[in-house]
Image 1 (spheres, rainbow, N blue to C red):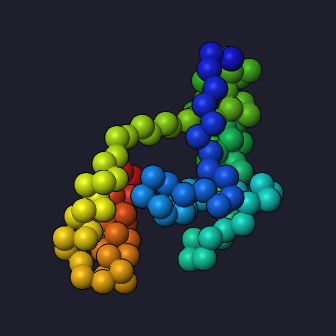
Image 2: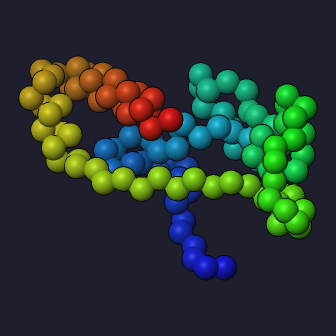
Length: 117
């Protein structure tokens, strides 16, 4: 192993902005992780694990020789710099009530997720 980083959200974790972390990660059938409300059904493990038919019955190309790819997965790590203080000042400047600030923050988070995906 070259290195290890514990990036997975744990139950109750919050991101630097104070919101529940990991809500955009899909639940995988058989993992024991429950779907969040509105997230839809858990997906089949073969959508992530290489070398098996996906729900569409296609098999993704995997690294060769087979021992390097089968039962493997692709990993994407996203690192970003956040400016929590500036974000909170913007919310206070642009919204008059706690409820309005919460709604504005939720809308900005949804836009951010759409841009990143």
